[in-house]
Length: 103
Image (cartoon, rainbow, N blue to C red; front, side):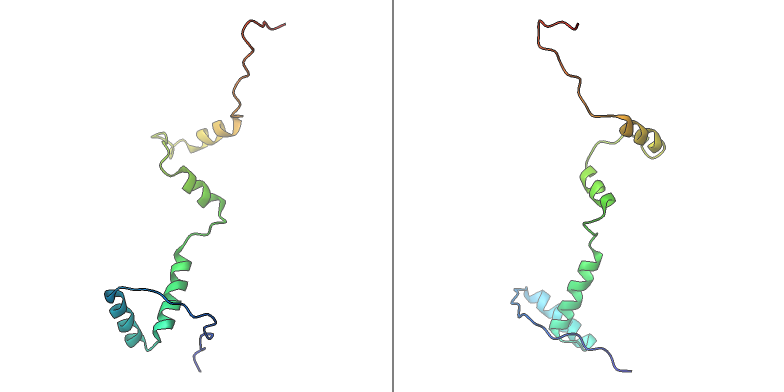
């Protein structure tokens, strides 16, 4: 069985790396038998897989809530807080202009 060859590069890219990064890249290429370019391509794909998907509503919510103040018992009473949030219309009462009476 022959290993599938990666697609040929279609766009050249110039990057700047430190001498330590170059030594690491050279070592990884030598140890794996891959080209430096293929090591970088695989590293890019691996990095992309590790990133959370932007389209997830739950992850977006979690990012939005990062650093927010939460009640100490949120884990134990989460249903209560969700119900309160659902019932809250987030409307502020309208104020009547001064001097006007209802009726």
